[in-house]
Amino acid sequence: MVLQFPPWRHQSYLALVRDWFFPNHTKQDVFSATVSDSSQDMRQRAIDKVNLWMFKAGQLPPAMEATASLTEALLHDEARRCSSATFISESAMQSIYAMAFARFVNAFVDRDVARSHIAGMAKEDSAVESEEEVTTVSGKGESSMYAHAATIGMPQKFVDIRHQVSHGDIPGVPLLKKMTEQALEWLWERWWVKHASGNPERALRELEERQRVSREARELANGTSAVPFEDGPSSGTSQHVLMEGGLDAASSVAAGATSRKRKSTVIEDT
Image (cartoon, rainbow, N blue to C red; front, top):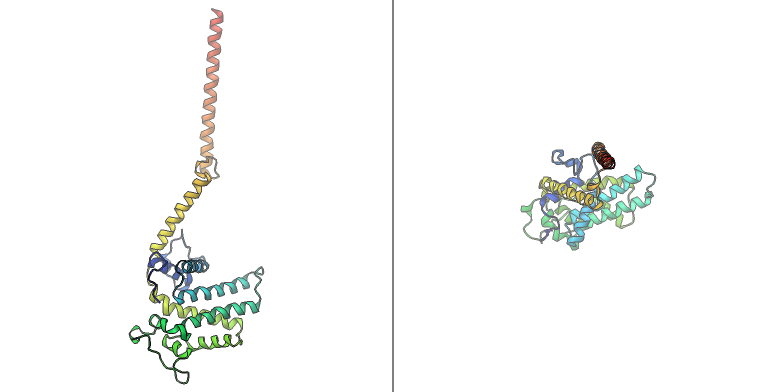
């Protein structure tokens, strides 16, 4: 699927989201510490960005949508394991994984949508001469999901899991988690490496600049730039200068008063 008008500004933004989704594959030297510390988990931000692009464009390549939904399932599971305040039961987590995984498989191998994605996901671009080409898997049938999965290089076990979910025989959370992680690796190799091959440095610089402008605008709106008594080393200096100025002014007033008193005394004596 090729978007005529992509919702991202340029390829650098797509590469940035790629690195947020897949920190294990990220080259650490392209990150700017002021925007994206490599120690931070940016996956939720990547999900939010994909959702924003979906809102703007109306549709996105299924690989992007699947990456977001599968990653979100993993984040729910990680939060559930790390915090007792997250009220997600085992069965609820099972359903979250199952729904995300079934949607992922359906987006690529369902007969109604498979042909539109073959050209973009085929194992070798040169092997696809027309949208009618379908690889036959022995014993599975030419129009089956297994045939379409073979065409795009999707492991058969992904389709097996999808069928189990569809028939109500949902696997346990450990297996679903493992399959979700493998599905994300497959998406990385089959789509992200191929379609998001840019460098995120330009996007990082632009994000940094927008954050700086936004921060300065907030400071001006709050009046913080005009307040001399802020905490920190500079505030003590400002207070000292103002106090000295106040003392000088008081001395001048006192001197003026003394001078006027002397003049008044001279006039009276005269």
